[in-house]
Length: 149
Image (cartoon, rainbow, N blue to C red):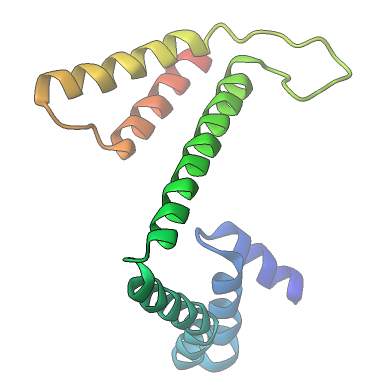
């Protein structure tokens, strides 16, 4: 029975804790049970974040807090850059991370990446606004199907 709950919760989008709570609540108590279980899982985290936001708002004018946030923003930029570099390696090298084989380069990702960059920067240059990431995901899915099928 638990395997069924986990399977359904993993197959639906969203965090597994919320999905499994909703699924178990609905199966045991109907719609009201699902609502209560979902609220029971979400509400504590929501309240904690709400309290932290209020505390941060009270201290946001403090010089030390401002400097700490500025330092954290630099760390976030570094993490995003390292993630971008990792994604480039994972997309361009077929068996990246497999230390038992020789890595091979995937040449089909180069035109896909080039087309996406041209669309993104061309749209931004012509329309003077950024292109939605959802549109880029749909375009990249289409290009992936076109190049890899």
